Length: 213
Length: 227
Image 1 (cartoon, one colour):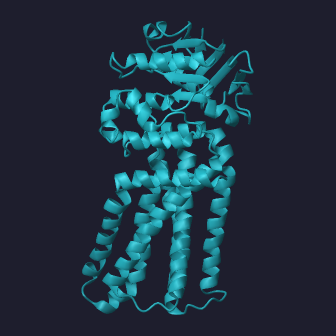
Image 2 (spheres, one colour; image 1 turned 180 degrees about the horizontal axis):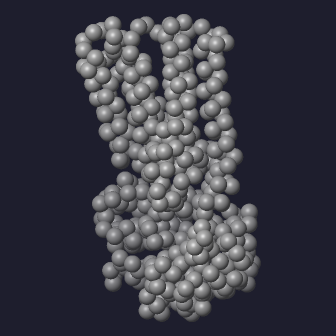
Image 3 (tube, helix red, strand yellow; image 1 turned 135 degrees about the horizontal axis):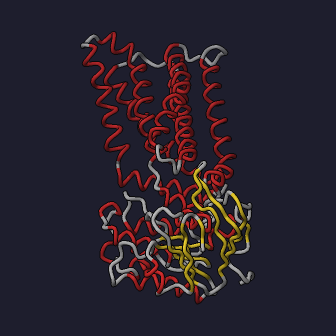
């Protein structure tokens, strides 16, 4: 890994029109660190995660992800090294779970595993051909999680990763984080419930009133 | 632009349509039903139905093509679009892939509607069928570009469906006017001359080219700006 810090934010602020969503966020994440961010609903956790995923440039402040400045032209080069598990499953409802995962595998040319393998890993071998629209929230979460096992991201960003997962499936989240940290990567996990973060995180920040503490 | 990425996106979009069957199973049958209703409403006066046949075709193309364009402009799951961005695919390739998929679906609808028009309305013989075909294709290209650009512009907006509907209709009207003029000239004379087919073909080509070039060139800055 070329950079000592995989992720750095300094006084980052994001707003939607005139409404501030994140007023001030500063943090650093080093390799092999898993950082938790907790906060009440609507506190800006998902927005902050989108900033870290380089999907949304900050309105103020500055930051660096995997060695590239946020909002700069270089972010396109590091995006394939980011694994994002968002709030909403990244699955086309019309397609089967297998077809969805095959599409994601083809998108990432460096996929190390097949769609069938990762669906089996998350316990969905028997439901591969089921349409995403016919699956339960827990199954969709598992399938979305399977996407993260298709390639080997250096930075894992997880938004409420255990939402909808049963007790048996929760270790899959820990496994994904562990695999990333073993590669000298890092992870950021956000949740409204700090107790969800305690098990996997090396430290926990709190986002409240738009300020990350 | 990367051909492999373009084909990947086309394949994905068409796979979604194949499973949802909205164009083939819903929009196209309703378009044919609408075509069927018109001659019945006009009575069995064959001279009248024959005269209005192509007018009905362009009206159906605008309404139901607009429906497909609206669906394509609003139907994408944002989380999937995010993953396409994170995969590192060039936004211009993604734009062009979605445009091609939209185009294929629109051409499918218009081809079936055109055949339906010929069977149901028995329009007069076409002097230059290739120019009519060109008009259909150029209209479909324009509508596909509009749908794709609107999709990129409105992604993430709460009132996406309403905004897309408000934009698709007015932007498609100049296209259908020009395409109908090409169709009219193709049925009457088929002569490629200034003031006849040529002018309207050039208008359509110009609109389509501007749309495609603008879409490809703005895909990347638009993606980064809209977040």
